[in-house]
Image 1 (cartoon, one colour):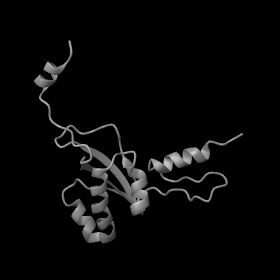
Image 2 (cartoon, helix red, strand yellow):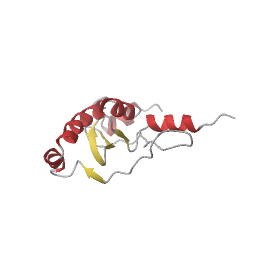
Image 3 (cartoon, one colour):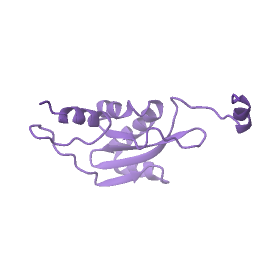
Image 4 (cartoon, helix red, strand yellow):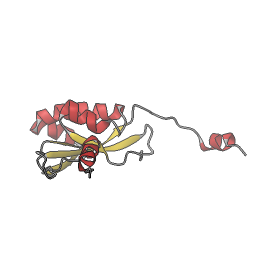
Length: 138
């Protein structure tokens, strides 16, 4: 009988899930982050720059990249390019701001970060409601 655990572990890794040890594997159990920092809070990014310049450099680039790629590709890109785990918290949920935003979560070493990023890969457009109603087939 074939086990589906390796498939589930691979799927979880691609989606940004923390690695978990399975029987017969060498993977170490994922440790939960010591703290979570909301980068949307006033002064949060500057505080990271002052206390952890390495994380700050990664965060600036990660926030830029995460606004340009879709949620499916984001976990693998973050892991390969930055050694970080991360994901969109709700891939199909966009904030109804203009420009549209999405909420992302990521972990670098023992710190977790969350932020709202502007979506640049597919910016969308504003369409007044009355135009949508006129264009609807009857």
